[in-house]
Length: 177
Image (cartoon, rainbow, N blue to C red; front, top):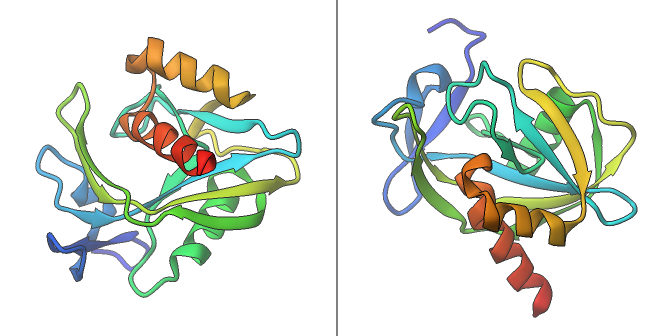
């Protein structure tokens, strides 16, 4: 493993860290449980930023998803990892970062057989500044009304990431209470 290689934190079934592995080696047809995060970014009008995953992505290439996701490095504070990833992937700064679904966990398999298996705390934040995505990560992006996004995910789920389809109703439920 070279020193510039991104590491992910491997977890046991109780979500306790048990080691690390190279990110490039983790996302396979037999992905171990590991730590990640998702972030849903809103603008000042309350719209949600959705992004379309670049075609070069190993898992779910070309599908629409939440604003961005990532993995905290070993020992890295997850909130700091969210801020870091927002800059890297979308070229944005975040305001009002809030952990909303601390225990979100899922396992999903894409059409090629690649597995995502993550403990994935979900954050929401407000954008500061213009969006300037990394084309290796994001091929398209759009600010959308949440109700329209929910309707689209419900009617054409195949076009969206499975984690977005699971996170949207959970976030809506939180707002209702």
